[in-house]
Length: 399
Image 1 (cartoon, helix red, strand yellow):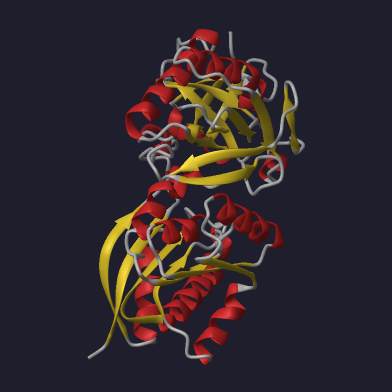
Image 2 (cartoon, rainbow, N blue to C red):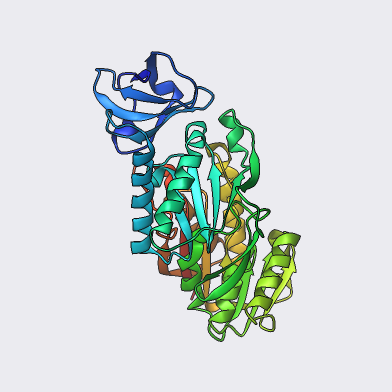
């Protein structure tokens, strides 16, 4: 029998609304023996059964729910069912050559992310309970994919995020099973990339912008394009492949720029794309002073905030970068801009962009609003699953 966690009266509101977490300050009592990482049963204050999840007293997220069925065994059959559902959803909603196969809470497997890059899997495990199930989950993934004739040649673990320390876990990266070449070639939107799953950011490549890159590319035919925070060149290469006259990609990472140059060569786009290693905040004022203007400017910055405490500073950063970008857009040109922090809400991000526009006397016409690709599904009531906000605007002078 598992231990039983009872919630305080009036607590668990997000959980009851469909969320996946129980916080440390929401629990009234724990009865029975358990070890951190064990599956426990969760009751409301009045004894009503709320489901089962794994517990960790080291974490502010005290319990991550696995099922709302309090009688459900969390075994191999259950894990395989969850994985099967995740894969069937991807087959229906996205191109699956490279995609996020498991997106943690949004796939009801809290605390684990699994990305598929062609025939390689990259796993990131961020919670103690799910870490114990990692081998079982990966076994289920390879079995489910094999059922569709897909053979996985290698698995690499990128559980090296600092958040693991908040769970009382050490950071880790390395091979799971036989070693393989960790520079993996993928194709997305018809463009080839080399993904460094060992040393690239996060799991090696940002799959969540897949269709946003394509949407921005549609605006770039015969255009002069500036791609800021280009990372490994993905937005820049989509722009070039769509027929841009010229593209300038900028990033502060030497490694990222080297990979971007390699990706441009891989696609035969080197003559149309130029990459420079610079701090974007320093470069944009210089371009403005030089009188430069672009038909399309793309902003894909890293998360300026990873906690509620730093949101105010993040607003300043987003306002500054969008203000600078708008000054560089030709009258009637286009700005694609995004935030990848779930703490920067859609409403706050929109307000920040609007404020930047007013400050530089620009008028914005919204072309479209987008979010993360469907292989990163947003689970309503699980706020952390909704993080990417992506706008495309036409930028017009005030007249």
